[in-house]
Length: 159
Image (cartoon, rainbow, N blue to C red; front, side):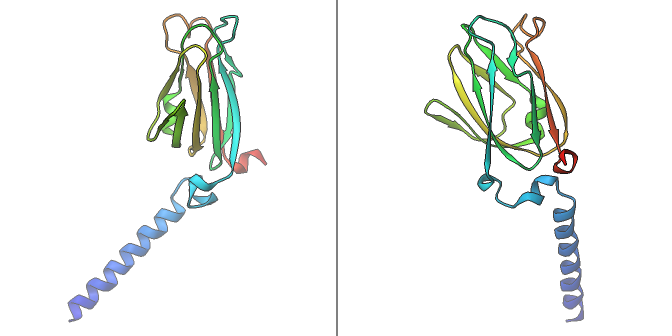
């Protein structure tokens, strides 16, 4: 009986420690609320290329705050396909979904390919502060200047 009581106390202590680590060791995303999908949404737009076939992102720098929920609207107004490739940024964010046409994709996203005239919406919550590279890996596009940066800041650093 004493042994059972000991194990109950030990289990309680371990669970409290793990619970404490979960709340205090978690990224800033957890500080804003538990249901990330219900956070208010901020829309940000980016164009991949231009109607005159310029190989650039417009804008070529995006800035997000960790813990806030965003809808990134990606538009390809150019006559050729382009990629939005930012693997490290995607790894530092929680993706709720990507919508393109009548398709909704869930799960981890590392790059999006947009064909001419395509539109996609990526809903996500950035979690890990840092500066991440953005590029279009189609041969010649990165070299022509189709690059950018994405910065995730903490709410503390924007005050």
